Amino acid sequence: MTAIEITGSPGSPYTRKMLALLRYRRLPYRVHWTNGVMPEGYPKPRVHLLPIVYLTGPDGEREALTDSTPIIRRLEAEHPHRSVIPDDPALAFLNTLIEDYADEFVTKMMFHYRWAHKASAEVAAPLLVHWRDPLTDGEQAKAMAQVFATRQIDRLYVVGSNDRTAAIIEAAYERLLKILGTLIQRRGFVLGARASSADFALYGQLTQLAQVDPVPRDLAHDTSMRVRAWLDLMEDLSGRDPSPADWLSAEETAEALPDLLAEIGRTYTLVMIANARSINAGEKTFTAEVDGAHWEQPVFPYQAKCLGWLRDDYASLEADSRAQVDSWLSGSGCEALFADL
View 1: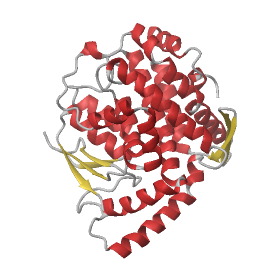
View 2 (view 1 turned 180 degrees about the vertical axis):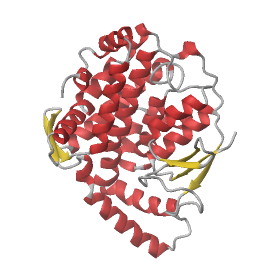
View 3 (view 1 turned 120 degrees about the horizontal axis):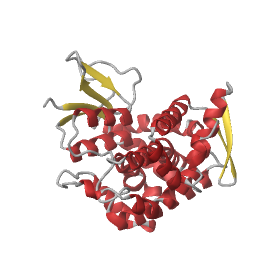
View 4 (view 1 turned 45 degrees about the vertical axis):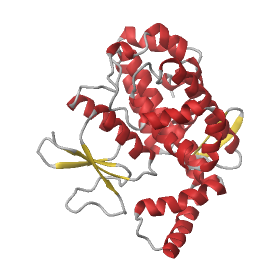
């Protein structure tokens, strides 16, 4: 088959998510580590985000795509072997929910720890410059790193990171490390003994949090070396041979996932709902009470779309699958995602 091509960066959690997933699925690929310039002759995406994944469209021409979750679903349709989506529709729905939590809320942790802490910013900024172009002159690299760090620090408010929310974000990160460590110890991955797209989404964010940036990396080492080791293993799972029996059963799901679902209900759910309500009201910012503290940030239209897609998926479940999902979510706080906004 034709190799999938990706333009990305080692500092992009979504690039890392996609590359690890492609290795696991044994899909051939080629990476263009970006220096800010598109490969010559390649189409431009509608929105220039990383990674850019180039797939072959129905007309035989390259398509430039940037949204990892629908790309993964398209790859599932085109290459069904070694699936990262559970066979059971109810468990597949939980997988989508957890994946979106990682992509849309754990990424707030990543951005916060990288730029709100001086020690992390001093590591990340020059790394991002040299990942972009390792030939950059030393003094020029230093100046570029300072400009980039200043710009990113000034944008912390966009993800809701500020003096009020710092404690919320950092407590949520520490809880996630503990919860994930317990899940890994149970059967190796979040949804059983095989990797799901939710695993790869969490892995992508944690490559930066627990492997690159010193402040959250040290916390990960102190909190769960199991999670830190898991990230190294997740990087290349091409040698694993998954079985349908590796997914959690309904009973195992009810035992294994309450803490993770409660964590999602405690943070992600409240932020996503408040964001969507403010967008529906035509407002430019939203506020929420998260973990007993005030959360405020500019609205994020894309995350309202994510919530809409999640609600559509929930509505499309067959009655028995929806009842199963409802039983798993009961008491977690996640139920509010599917109530009237």
